[in-house]
Amino acid sequence: MSEMTEYDIGAAMSLLDEKLKNAQPKRRGRKALLAPYADQLRRYVAAGWSRKEIVSEMKALGISISAGTLREVLGRAKSGKANRLTT
Picture: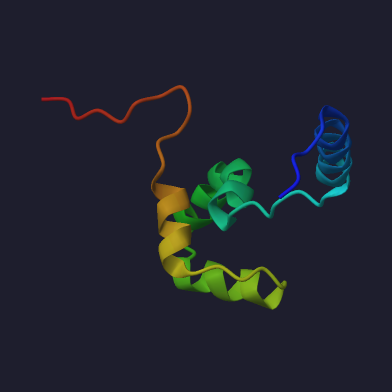
């Protein structure tokens, strides 16, 4: 077994850094992609669209999403306001 020299380790780290810089970023999850549009999607639901209809329309546009994922995105609390029950 041969020991790696400091030069070998430095060269390997340099190659690793270059490879990571050139790597494609990981694909974000569907929830993260839809989060900026949550308010707009909530307006569609308020206007009478069902979640199933929204999922179907998105699928027709080439965006594959499940009804459960849409429900989770719509269910997230709106930023800046808390949902409270008053008694």
